Amino acid sequence: MGQQDNRSYEFGRFRLNTAERVLLREGELVPLTPKVFDILLTLVENSGQVVSKENLMKRVWPDTFVEEGNLTQNISLLRKALGETPGGVQFIETVPRRGYRFVAVTSEPSHHVPVAAAEIRAIEVPPAVVAVPTRNRRTPAFVLAAGLVIVSIIGVMYFTSKAGSTSPISSIAVLPFVDESADPDASYINDKIAESLINCLSKLPQLRVVPRSVVAGYKGKEIDPRKIGEELNVRAVVTGRLRRHGDVISIQADLIDLQNVAQIWGQHYDHRVSDALLVQDDISRDIFENLRLKLNVEEKKQLEAYGLYLKGRNAWNKRTGDALLQAIEFFNKAIEIDPNYGAAYAGLADCYNMLVVYGRLQPKEGFPKAKEAAAKALEIDESSAEAHSSMAFIKFRWDWDRIATEREFQTAIKLKPAYAPAHQWYSSYLVAVERFDEAIAEAKRTQELEPLSFVASSHLGWIYYLSGKNDEAIEQCRKILELDPSSFPARRYLGLAYEAKGMYPEAIAEFQTGVKLSGSPLMLALLGHAYAVAGRRAEAQRVLEDLQQLQEQRYVSPYTVAAIYAGLGDQQKAFEWLDKAVEGRDIWLMNLKVDPVFAKLRSERRFTDILARIRLRP
Image (tube, rainbow, N blue to C red; front, top):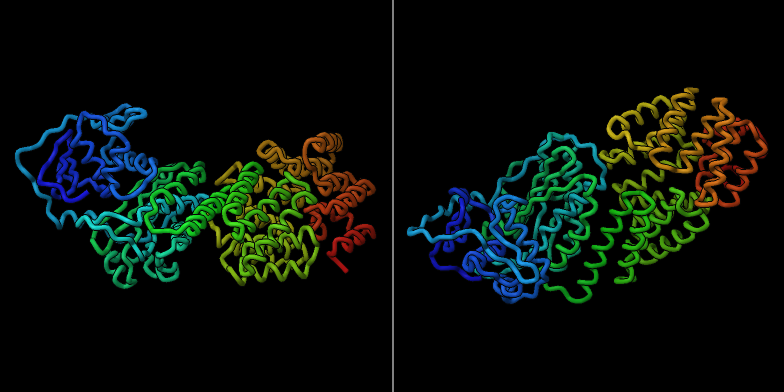
C-alpha cells in the first residue's frame, strides 16, 4: 500500500494518522508493523462493513501470494496492539467463513496533529539491551524452544519501507537478549537463544548472518544498534528481552531495519515453561509462510526438512517414551523430504538409543536400528559430532568395543566441544572403566554446558555414586529435588547413595517415591534390592513377582532382576540373571565393574568371567 493522503480517524482512545502512518493511544505511539498498519487502515476505511479475507490479502499483499495463516497472525497482532481481551472492548469482529469487520465507532477530526519525526525514531529504534544477571533453573529444552519462538519474527525478510519501496534484508546480526528476572543464568539463556537464532537464520540462502562469536562481544554493552550495524556492516539487527512471571516466560523480540531506521517487526510471546516445546508447529509455519526471500524448490525443501528436524530434537529433549516415538516421526519426515539429511539420521539414532535406555525397546530391537541410522549419518557427514556421539554410545553399550568407543567420543568432542550429550555419555563410559576423576570432570563439564538442565545435574550425582563419592551424590541430588521434587532420576541416584551408606529407610523412601513418579520397572527393581539388603525379604520377593508380571507387558532388564537376587544373597539366581543380561546385551551391564549393588559378587570367578565376556577386562 502506498502513502495515504492526510487523513486521521478516531475511535475509542485511539487516533489513526494516514499521513504519518502511525497509531496513537492517548497521544502515545502504538508500535505496528507496516502490514499490521495496512490491515487496520483497510478495516477502518470500511468501518461497519465486512471485508473479506481475500480482499484484505489482496490489499495488504498486492503482488505476493500468502497463506491465510499469515493474515490470521497479523490480525492477532493487531488485536493485541488495540488491547482487545476476551469479554472486554472489541474493535474487530470475526465473521465466520467471510472475513473481518471493524465495529468501533470512528470519526474524522477536523484538524491534523502531526507526530514529531524524532519521537517516532525514538520508539522505532529501541536502546541496546544490557545483560542483567538472572536466576532461572529450567531445562535447556525450554531455552531452545524460547530461542525458536523468537526465530518466527525473522520470517518477514521482505518488507515495505516507509517510502513504499521493497527491499530484501541480506545481512543481519542477533544481539544478546536481556533477562529482566534478576537471574545469574541469563548469560546461558542468551547464548542458547543466539545459537538457535543464528543456526536457523544460517539456513536461509542469500542472507549473511554475523557469527555468534562476533556478536558475543557486545554482551553487556549499551550500544546504539545503528552503531553496531555500522561496525558489523549489517542491514538489520534482532533485539529482545525475556522475563519470567511464575511459570510463564514472556519474550519481547524486535527486528530493526537500520537502513531505514525503523522497526519492521515486533512481537510479544507468553508461554508456560511446561508448554514451551508445544509451539514448534506454529514456529515452523510462521517461518515458512512469512519467508520473503526468493527460494528455489530445492532450498524450500531444505528449509522444510530443517523445521521438522528442530521439532524432532525438541521432542527428543523431553526424554519420555511417547515423545521419543514422536521425534522418530519428525526425523523420518525430514528424511523423506531430504534423503541426504545427515542430522536427521543422527537424531533417529539418538531416539532408538534412548528408547532402549528407558526400557521401551529391548537392546536387540533398538540398537541395530540406532547403529544403522548413525552409520548413515556419518556416511553423509563425517564431521557430525552428533553422529559420532550416537555411534560412541552404541559402540559402548551394544558392541562392547572400548577402543572404538573412546575414539568416537574424542572425535565428537573435538568436532564440537560444546555438545553436552557427548560429554555426558563419555563420562558414563569413563566411570565404567574406573577412570573416576576423568568421569567426574566430564560430568561437571556437561553441567557447565547446560546449567539449567536437571538431566545434566542429576547425571553428575550418578557419576559421584558410581565413583564411590556418596556424600557428594547425596548433596547433588538434594539440590535438584529442592528445585524439582518430581525429578525421579534424582530420586534414583539419591536412593542409591543412601543405600550405599547403609541408610536403608531413607533409600526405600526415595525409591517408593520414584516408583510413583515414573512407574518404571527400573525404579521398582531398585526398590526390591533396597528391601533385600534391608532384610525385608518378603517385600523383595513381592517385587520379583511384580517384575515377572511386568515382563509380559514390557521389557524388564535382567540386570536389575539379578541385582535383587544379589541383595537377597542368592548368588546362583543372581548369576543366572546376569547370564541372561549378557545374552541380551543388557544396557546396564557396562556398569557391572563399578556397580556397588554387585560388590559382594566381585570375588567370585563367575563374576570375573562375565567381565571378560563383556570386554571390561582381558
